[in-house]
Length: 511
Image 1: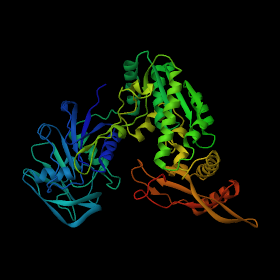
Image 2 (image 1 turned 90 degrees about the vertical axis):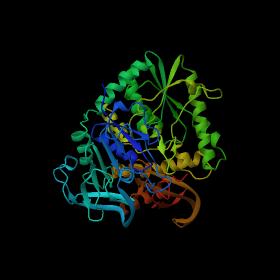
Image 3 (image 1 turned 45 degrees about the vertical axis):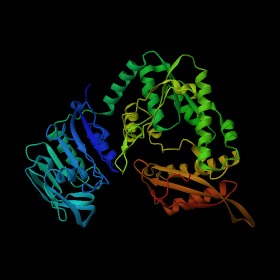
């Protein structure tokens, strides 16, 4: 089935991916491409959106897209930088703003007979984020909406299906942003709303069957949402020709290896569990530098996976849980596309499994869509709702060198914290949570004894995609009970602290 598509041209805005996700929430398929790498098959896109940018249209480094095959030929929505670009280079005027145009604002005027703002009323909140402002509309520009500080907040070009706004409809703070996008894409551009999890499953299963045929496929499972959904999709398509390998690197959460393995087997997956804990711990012996630890864990995984893949005969494909953010070419603030595409090349020196052909069933969708697809496939909601967990596992939550004793200590602490979040109904309110074992001993008193033992830090954050995150204000009573339980039940820990830093400037993990 051919879906209507929206092309989003990226000018380096931090919100570009959010535009794509909002469009997809309307059940319309969207793709992001750098502004200077416009696809040649433009006829396959029914509408175009220009993103914002940290650049100024007045600067020498202004980003110039080639809109010759788009403007006036396809419905186009220009957001923020795009709106200023159209004004500045088409007979209007853009100047530095006298007032601070950042944050919440409210629409004070709306052109009521305009389909672009249908079902949006005066007073509607929008989110501004720019230092320039449009002083004069471009040639044939018609004013559609204003705020108290920004007269030309929205306009259209007479004689074209071209619309422009100086605010961000894609962020949650713009309360009618979704309505505005729907007005543009459905009412004006006429796109069909048929991109759904059900249609994705049906089409992906058919595409996998066509691509893979009767070949065998190997997949490394991690216990996380992406690899699990990829496995169930592949299983639906090719059944027993899918061989899953779940490696225990000794750095998983308490009892996770056996419980997740059992869960996978219950889902009918053809899965083999490999306990390589000792091999990983040996490779990590004496390493304290975070990068060296990550490398050791990554290399050990490749060796173990390669060993296991060798035991299978005639495997032609390697499946991966790659998702859309992994393959988007993003535009850096300097204007050049910074490629973030993960590629695999059939070159010498790589492990054998890296020389297999690649199948990535989720490469077209975002994390929130992966969860919706998983729900359509009937995967247990508890598994789909799992917090993200880093690939190196507890290896980057134990600061300093790693020993089996430290891993066991942190597993106990982590289990108390995570189980506590679930018992108190807090788990689903948190995006990611975990405990860090610090390379710090501190003095404590237990009974009449003086102790000199470890300190652990608890971390819980709210986020949508991990790019930015705020610490969660967990109830004092919960923290109090959790701290008592950890100190009383985990031998070797006598102090618990709670991390109240946001990202940026801090990261979510400590290493």
